[in-house]
Length: 353
Image (cartoon, rainbow, N blue to C red; front, side):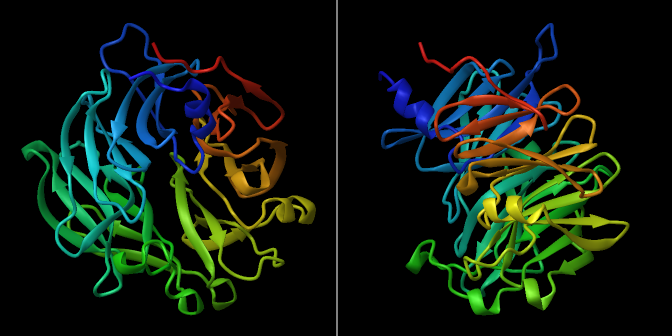
């Protein structure tokens, strides 16, 4: 099927996350980036190289969102946008589909997942909609992705989950928003939201630490995560309160404490109460946060101090480039951009054969 390149590029990264890894078996260890896109009414998983070229694309049964790469393997995952019914295991080198996971009865995927450090387990954020609670699904990737159990996420609406640098702890962003398949993506509990960041033991799911947003920020849905090698965790948020309010949209866990970080007022207002993605650079010293509604990219220090911002129209997808202070970003305009705190350079446009 011929792909409408302009329409495809116009949807690349519009509301999707962007994950990075290296392609196995290549002479040069070049990073690749897994994202999702739309071509008219067709949704796709897409692998980009570090020049912004499309290496492969695969049609999806619905809208995709987050991705994950299995350690020491050619496998990668693409997850359905919440509330989702599929998670697909792909060959990262060719884009070949090897299997599709479906959530068990009474569960829906919530857009993200990650692997254990040895690649034997896959963890998925999920919604137990009958009991209005979040769970972490556990799958044995070494045994055909057999479902082997689940953990309580200790919150409602878990979204992104990442493995911390210790190789054992799972960090989960509980966005606090309840949904039900009977009402689609309708948000059912805004007045009672309790967003939180939690740390779980990846082996048995036991709760290690839970950080709940203070009452005055209880409508701040914590969504996307990034951690550096030192274990500093940042969460980007979306505010569900009054549109004229200007709450902080960036949270962190530093020295065991939950902190919130604000940009200068003009920039804070320009962020329009909505962050798309968050990512540390390759060194773990610079943090980028995309703000698609505000057409803005913001940059922060590893301590949470605002550094700078630059314009990026409808930019959302975000991942570290392989050099200090640089990022790859995708935009709803179709641009694939290499971005730094001082500059933003559009890479060559992607194209299909």
